[in-house]
Length: 212
Image (cartoon, rainbow, N blue to C red):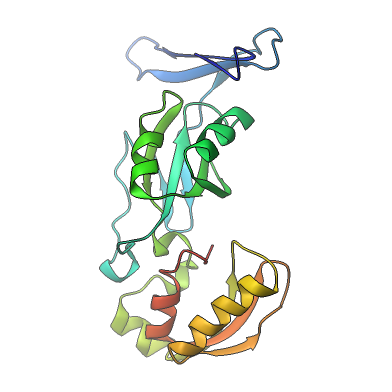
C-alpha cells in the first residue's frame, strides 16, 4: 500500500507459529525512506469501559443508556498500523474532523454517515464503530439510570470538551443550562468545564458530540 504520492509505504502481514493464532505485523516507510523494522500490530482498544479487540474479541456489554444515540457523529477509527499523518489527511479530505487518539492504533473522529462509509472502505482502516458515552464516563458512573440516580442524584463533574475557546464553551454552557444543569466554571482549563448535573442530565450530556 502506498500513500502520499508514493512517499509513504505500508506492508502488513500475519505470522503464525505451530498451534498458535496468527499475529498481525506491519512495517512503514516514510518520506521515501527504507521500510522500518517490523512491528506487531496492537489491536486491543483500551477504553474506560474495558479492553477488547473489536474484530476478534467480544466487546463489553453496554447498558442502553450508555450507548450512542442517533444522530451521533463521533466514531472510533482503528487502523492497521499506528496512526500516520497520511491517514489523518485522507480522513480530513473526506470531511472528518480528528478529535483525539485512543490506544491502540485508533482515533476518535467526527464524521457524517456518508463520510464514515468511505472511511470504513479505506485500505488502511481496520475497524470503525460508535464512540459510546460508556467510553467517556468514569467506571464508577457506568450504571443504569436507576442506580445512577440513587448513588449520584446531583453531582459536580469535570467535563472534558473536544473544542476550545470562548464561543465553543459558551455554546456547551448554554446547552447545559437549557436542560436544567448548572455551569459552575465555564473556563476551568483549555478543554475543561465544571458543571453540576442531576443523573439524567449527566446521561444526556454524555451523548453530546462536544464531550470527550
